[in-house]
Each structure stands twice: as structure tokens, then as C-alpha cells.
Length: 366
Ligand SMILES: Nc1ncnc2c1ncn2[C@@H]1O[C@H](COP(=O)(O)OP(=O)(O)OP(=O)(O)O)[C@@H](O)[C@H]1O
Image (cartoon, rainbow, N blue to C red; front, side, top):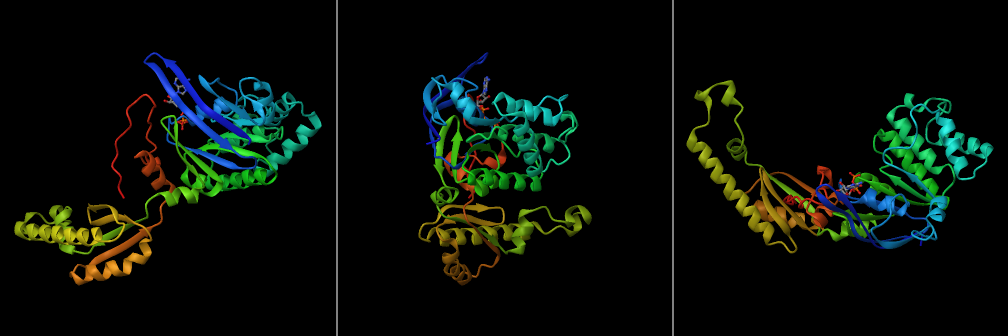
């Protein structure tokens, strides 16, 4: 095992009282894995990573990192790992190549090897020609890639990356993912934090989901998605009248009151809409395994295992009731659904949820 942590806890003292940033984390990372630590702002990702990288001491708990005991041999841990912080580690006035070489020298790498490896990494991470540039003149994305070079220059066998692709454009992100996979293929183990679901999905062999300082799920992206109960299905009803009843009418402002639909028309449309929606909900509830059935503005949403295979029968039943549909969508579960199921919150909201505040209540939408 490259990382074996048990009962890691970290409490910060603040003016408002103690903040329990990490509340008993157990985690195992095998040699050669890319493991993603996924969670919203304030979940405890950085604090956990900083403990494992020896930058802060745990309040309690223990860990072995890269073969060394975190408490007894932090120097041994430090020598074997690379750590790329969220905020970067280069000085604005310094020259990029000098920063890389100085950093490598701290780890006992010879100057010649540091220059050769550093320049190769500059090419690989799309920083050609920037070796002699002052750090402050680099773009945000270039500086981020320079941070990564710094974390890799001493050829560590375990690499911690805190939000490695934040601020990178899509091409630079894809390029960095390739590079991270290449490091894994050459035997390194990578532990990274991310907010990006697509990144976790595309890049990570395994994902740990953390929320409020506790691990709430772990597995391969596929296994996690399978834990979510079924596909999400959206049925859009095709009642034009109900659409008019439900939304402001275009002619309301254009042509004045004379052309507004008559109040009783609106009532009738509303009644038709309610009737159709109720009928569809009744049919859907009769399906084996349907859950989270709910009426939305223009139709009905629900979850069901193997959505594609139940659709033909469902559509026949809806048709038999004389209800027309405008559209049908079936979506396989995403990691966002996983997150929503596990925490009651969507990662896409990206809303801060500090550990010392009550959990936000947000209704599941599917
Ligand atoms: N030095 C500190 N002093 C006080 N509280 C802290 C400190 N560092 C972190 N915290 C608090 O601990 C909790 C966890 O923070 P942490 O940075 O580990 O979360 P995170 O999941 O990495 O978030 P982000 O995605 O925003 O980086 C938060 O409530 C944060 O405010």
C-alpha cells in the first residue's frame, strides 16, 4: 500500500470555536493507482492531503505514506513524495528554470540532471521556451503547469496534486491528464483532489468522496455510478395549452390585454395539464423499480433501472391514455448523481459548506 491512513482527525481552533475539518478518515491507496479525492468546498480534501504530505500534523489518527510512518518519519515521507499545492509554490521574481533546479537540488538531484529533466518536463507540459522567463510574466495556466513541474522534478513515487487543473484551458487539462496517466504507467502513484466530475471520471482509477470531513463513498467511477438507483428519465408533455397556461404569454406585453387568452381558457388548460401530469405519474408509479417520481414544470421526472428497456411499454401506456409527449430523455447516472445521492447536495452547485455549519438542505431533482 502506498498510503494507509486510519482515523485521521484534524481540528482547527478558530475565534468562533473549533472547526472539525477532518473527522476520522480511513483511506488506502495502492501502488500505481490514480485516486481522486472528490468533494465540495470545505469538505476537508486539502486538510487531509496536507496531513498526508506532512505539512500539518493530525490531531489524532495514524498513517503510513510511501512506506514511512507519518508521525515517526516525516522526513522519510517528504523525501519520497511530490506535493503540488493549490496556491502554487514559485516566487514571482524568480526565473522559472532556476526555481525548478533549486527545488530539485533540495532533494539531492544533481544540477545537470535537474536541468535535463526540467527542460524535458517543460516540453511535455507545454512550456517550451519559458525556461528563462520570470515566473510573474507567465500566464495563470503556465504558472500552474510550472507548479506541476516543481512537484515532479525529483521523480517522486507518490505525487499529491491539489486541484491540478484549476485555471487550465480544456486543451491544457487534457494534456495534463495524459501526463498524469503517463506517470502512473511509469510506476508512480497519484493522489489528487478535484472539483471536476469529468476529471474524476476520466482520469481516476478510484474515487473517494468526502463531505463534512468524512469519507462518504469510494470505488471506481463505474461502481459508484451503479450504486445510484437507475437511470434518470424525463418525460416532457406536449400539451400546447398547458404551456400557455403555465408561462407568461408572448402577447401579454406585445399586444395588450385585448389578445390575452380568456381566463376560462387558462383554467381549462391548467386542468388539462394537471390531469395529464397526474395520469403520467400514476402510470410511472406502476412501473417496477420507479423512484423519485415528481412533476416538474413541463412534465414528469423519475428514476428507474434500465430506463431504455422500460420505455417502449411506458410510451404505449401513455399513448393509450391519449396523452401526447414532446420529448423523452434517458440519462445514465453521472458522478454528480452519485454525489447528490450520497450527500443530498450537487457538486455542480459548488456552494461552500463549511464543516462547522449545518448541512445545506437541497431537494433531489431526479
Ligand atoms: N487553517 C485553518 N484554520 C481554520 N479552519 C480551517 C483551516 N484550514 C481549513 N479550515 C476549515 O476546515 C474545513 C475544511 O477545509 P479544506 O480546505 O480541507 O477543504 P477542501 O475540501 O479542501 O475545500 P476546497 O475545495 O475549497 O479547497 C473548512 O471548513 C475550512 O474552513
